[in-house]
Image (tube, rainbow, N blue to C red; front, side):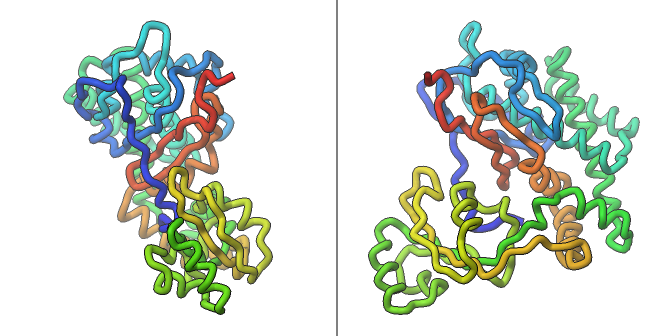
Length: 336
């Protein structure tokens, strides 16, 4: 499930450094894209690019794959300039890191769900590479093969989840602990040009939910009809929500959407950690979601809970309809 309030615009890779397009290959096959923001010129040389559930993804591997033309051609449909000698460009590094983070999340979930990598999975992975990226060699080929077979194995196991099995439901519940830390709130996004009108309407006693109708361009983003996990809130809104008094009107909160002058007013009605005994309907919904959308829906739930990005590579991971993205650093790489 995605929350309307979290529909942050996907950042495009755009700069003078871009030229001849490369064909999208494996990402089409495995259903993952890595649109990343451009910030800074390169990535500093530390050997930790990220950790996933305590497992380190090394900068050495990121750099190796980001300078492998065959791997990058298989990774992206973006037009990225060939890397300068000795320098790994930030966008390329974040693309590779997004892929490796996704792969590690999948590998850990294969182990946690006791999924089996079958001979058929291996054969299909080998065939996909041979057909779509036969030029892949060595570590690059191994990395892609690992992703393909783990994804296939986890897809098969998640497809076997039995809603009547207490063991399966508990494993599903325990797999995403942050999902159950939920807040029930009303939130309205108001464009910069409508802030004065919103203030006036609220002073006159208008209900928060009515701003969508009374202030042009406003959008009712969350309602109390459905509580949402805190982790689904935009990062800039999490602290104000955590410190808000129950029932109090809070706002306008600026800077929720980077590059957008819109502000947010909200009111928290309740907050709770949903216990397993009360999670039946939500678990059934997760089972339906996994059945409809496949392994990506589970990857989306797991990513932010497991992943810690080195701040020189990116600020955080963001999961949307197009997959997992490593966002550009808050401070451009190379800034003293």
